[in-house]
Amino acid sequence: MPRTRSRPSPPMPSLKPLALLLALAGPALAEGLAEPLTALEGDAGRGRAIIADRSHGLCLLCHSGPFPEERFQGNLAPSLAGVGARMSAAELRLRLVDSRRVNPESIMPAYHRAEGLHRVAPALRGRMLLQAQEIEDVLAFLLTLREESP
Image (tube, rainbow, N blue to C red; front, side):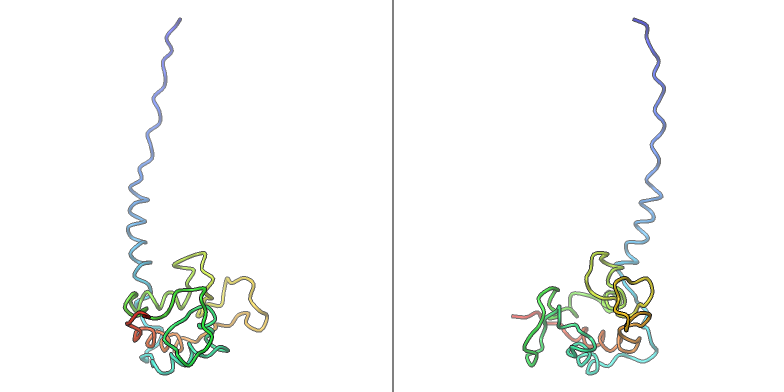
């Protein structure tokens, strides 16, 4: 039987560029949005009101938290109790602006994005659910929530 020469396999492509991209992008995404959306500092009192308002913030449709006056609270999403200890301001800001940048499967609405959204009610098309200052207000309140629920 004649011997056949096998050709050498082509070299495997280097994974170094991909690893570098992931190393650079991963921390940036994990860090969130560090820069405030407005020059004014957020107001925690206004933020709490937005979160509790079922016709504006809508947060308690999915989340629960330290809102004893609110009889019905959601259970589809994590509790807001202790969120200020679990996440940084930048991480929370990113989730409020567009949670799908963190988790593409998230059901949380993009509160400060109007483009590229699907299945949006006609009255809300082209509109942001919360303005920049409202995002900063909600963020200011969330950062006060340092204790987990009992």
